[in-house]
Image 1 (tube, helix red, strand yellow):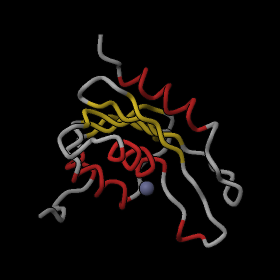
Image 2 (cartoon, protein in one colour):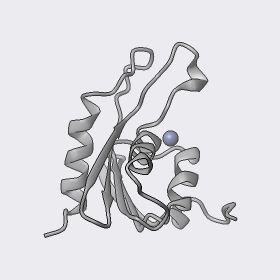
Image 3 (cartoon, protein in one colour):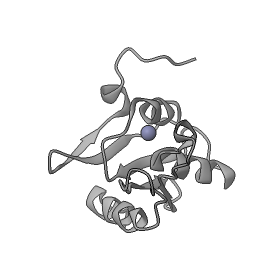
Image 4 (cartoon, protein in one colour):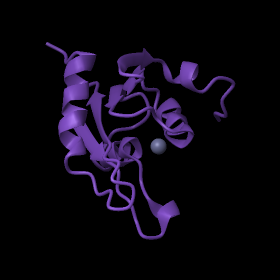
Length: 122
Ligand SMILES: [Zn+2]
């Protein structure tokens, strides 16, 4: 039985507890559902040199790539905050079917192209 978007978001919420966000205190968690059914989580990782910080979505994608995932291999991503523009670009490149995230207190589910219209892609 595949995970629902709500179940995937619950995994992201649990992951958020492991975030490293001492500067913003804004913990974010993400959970990727791979097409083989595996779930890979990520968290935001901040740094004293602020621009070096990593978003939870890209952390999860990088972990999945290290385990062999490639574009087309990711079914869905859930994240506890609305994805930033950079993460939207990453998710578009990986061909994620849908992105589930909390916004204005409700679960939104969108296709990457809807979150990044007229986007750059090779
Ligand atoms: Zn981001």
